[in-house]
Length: 435
Ligand code: UD1
Image (cartoon, rainbow, N blue to C red; front, side, top):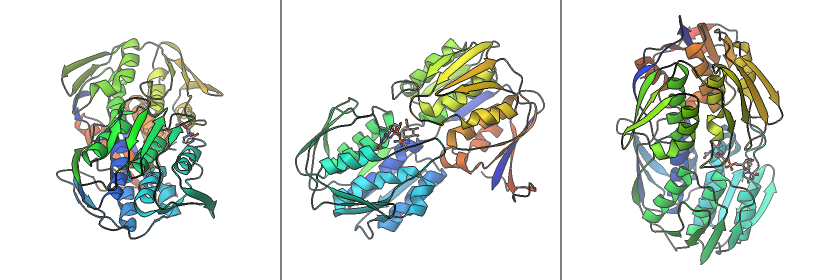
């Protein structure tokens, strides 16, 4: 187990520049899409995060060979032949997004056996819409011994209306439809920038997709797709996390290599809270925090609404707002585990069903806390920036899944932060500095 410790003599005021990495949620479907072709795919601006390595381990088991140039953040990947059609439980459990191989594997090789993801720290996350969509495309699916077993000689285009907006569900079905016979009309698609980016990648590979960025996609299947070079879009959640870091600490951060349009919902809320957000160049945002933070009401929603993946970070911000804020979480149930940890630092938060009521402003004081999922970890790191004394965040492995070099980025802004190895008896041993 690893832990991060933040030393805060007095609350930080972050100033400086941060370069935002490529989006984790865009690179994972892009890697899965490589299963659709025997040609080489080159991805650039690849974030060096643990989930990428997990996905690469998975696609290697399925037959991919790859070279990841960590200096240039470039991934070259090739799946000449599908070697295995099975995504094992140990990998799917480590990362739910492994389900993204289901559609492409089935479409390319006629068979896919993918472990059911099962429970997860942020509540129930079924994959029924992935399954019923693939059935509509003509797949025979059964669930046996915890695995989805899917078969189809060649998928057939169909009209599918998704009951609910699902990001990876849309991605799985679009990828599968690209190799299906005939036309697929996919309605009520997720509009997240990562879905759009995947569609753009598939079009470059030779797929025919109309309506990209809209709720209805029309996909005309092809016999095969080809190789491509594609740049991964900036991570809008990492961008948002640093935007909150600036707002929370009354700081002044310049965020480089961002896509301002993708963070509009976040920008709008920060402006209401009193921050100034300026776009000084095409890919640069400057966020200046204010002395007084105003309370906010936030309801999470599918894109372009306020992202559920930013809810935890905003909760910390609201502990410092003058007044009562309410967060309503509509995407996932049980996604408030970070609230209990914030209480340990001195926050005043009540949970009522899908709502968190945060009363501010309460000073936070450092304590030992536990990261329960990826975005909850980010929330606790942010809290550590203003909690006086030492904040030790245990089980920080969650953070490594999706934030590239967060310690280094924070250290460059003057934060005193160290990584420890915790041997479970609460003996903390300093870890080597990662660079
Ligand atoms: C993706 C993101 C995750 C983000 C989430 C919501 C990736 C790798 N992960 O997760 O970071 O928090 O979108 O923006 O991109 N649902 C069903 N049946 C299904 C599928 C989904 O009922 O078959 C429900 C879910 O329980 C949830 C809602 O639909 O309530 C949205 O989930 P979904 O968009 O599928 O989330 P993920 O794609 O898993």
